[in-house]
Image: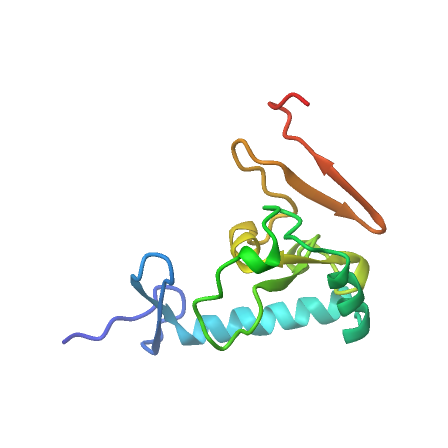
Length: 149
């Protein structure tokens, strides 16, 4: 067996994860992952903002469904990783990586599937799907340009 080295950093320390949907095993460079995590933490600190657990619970209580896919929380299947108890996640409306902050006005609940598909984009426009854009204290639904209301 030959060692494989990361093309970015030259390290040979690999971690593995299995996709919950396809069951495929993927590898990642642990050194590069640690660097990405440190960069994210630093960006989060620079961007500022914070919220309390109470503010989060109050915001979550306003939603019976995922704002993006409109599926009720109770109808969303449990997350494949049993470490997570809830189907909802905290989503940064404006992602940390694009200058967003962690204040409660930039946080919304999304189901884990929508948050994963959203990645670091502000909005996701899926074919034949209504998507949510949420601005502080104003909740509005917008149809994609190619849809008629």
